[in-house]
Length: 180
Image 1 (tube, one colour):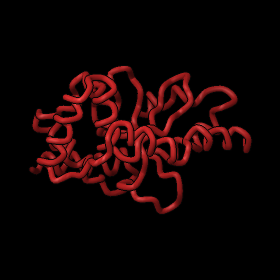
Image 2: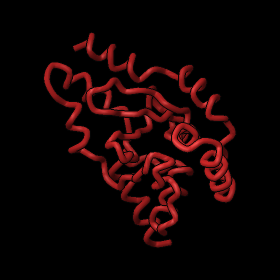
Image 3: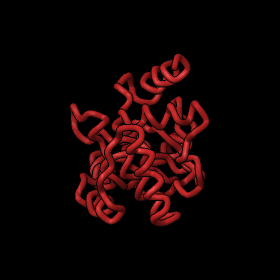
């Protein structure tokens, strides 16, 4: 368990600004460190958890006249993973004092507007698995969450509906464009 604790300490410091690692992310890291990570499967987007903030990948968003707005937005996002298509997943602290456990997942894709995609990491994994591989991926993810004492109750359709009702990271970025 020493290796996992060391990794989690590094993740807290290097990716999450010293904030506590959310429970689901702790369990996912334990699985990745021990070689049992189901989210690395292409059915879930081949998600690779990150031990350090991916500064080089984030620099892709910091160019031209929009750089200042993106820099303000990225200061609110704790990037925790990268998918096989090089898109980034982050937890968005959209208001002061919001705990990471309560922060929605945002998707950052080069040359696209950022999107709020799920209320939680577990919800994103279920939604992504369903989109890529259907109900079997959803069932396997829910079994894994259950075995690890984690909750995930929303159906993929409910995840999409919930994401639509969350604050919009795209609208925040647009506001920052107007402010600059």
